[in-house]
Image 1 (tube, rainbow, N blue to C red):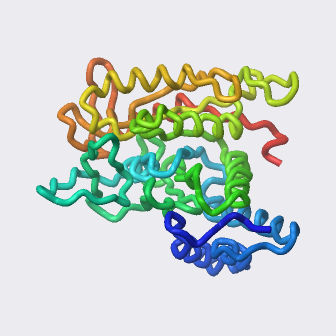
Image 2: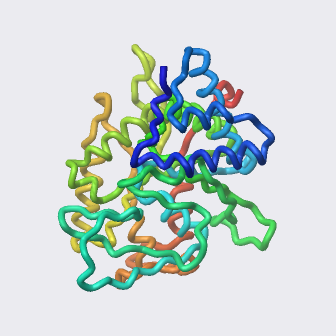
Length: 339
């Protein structure tokens, strides 16, 4: 029996082992079975598999639980390389700029959070300072393995230091390659963390280049999202239908459209695709935003996180994006969920 984790290209085993080991040392816990599973050691019995699953859940919750518990929290979800970590870093106040083009440089594969699509390479965003959320990419397994969290001032209230705070959590990618036990453990831990928060919101990140694969990445992300967070009107099982009081609303954010000349057309097409998708036979009513419009100014240059502006009656910038997520996404939790 195996957890499915293998030491192969695309699975950053060493970084994951180091991350789990640091957490074990910090908390004084034994995560040795997780380390063995990450290194590809096969499980000899179902009991060993269950032990790994329990440790995945425990480690995932422990990594950010102290910040999330009792606080209003935004969870960033999405496939590897979609731009979760860049979005999260910018929301915490990290400034980005475009890297200078390298003339006549040979074409090489990139490990960055931006990827080539149909022969076009996006302008690469590089940070101006150390990033609290680490970046991965599609060509490699994301270095965001366990979730990472940062507390931020509540953007809806102007307060001095010590005022109300919200928490931003960059959650592990949907396509983590560590194996099915790890993916299942992440799903269980996510529901636990949502229940620990005083109020939970979700921003589902999607890359504009998903269009190149006929939006299959978007459909996969939506399928997983509605399984974890069923919206109103969806049938859970049999004739059990999710009602308006318990239905979840996730905000979907489009990234990397700063590189696309016909951005408005692309975003309109993106929203049409979202509303036309019917994962599990259900038409998804989730609202959509263009994150690049907030991160880039009218000239297409990276906007400073402290820079907020109003254009044609709409607000753009870090504060506006955070407020939009907090207003548009709702994840109701009943007493049973919180136990």
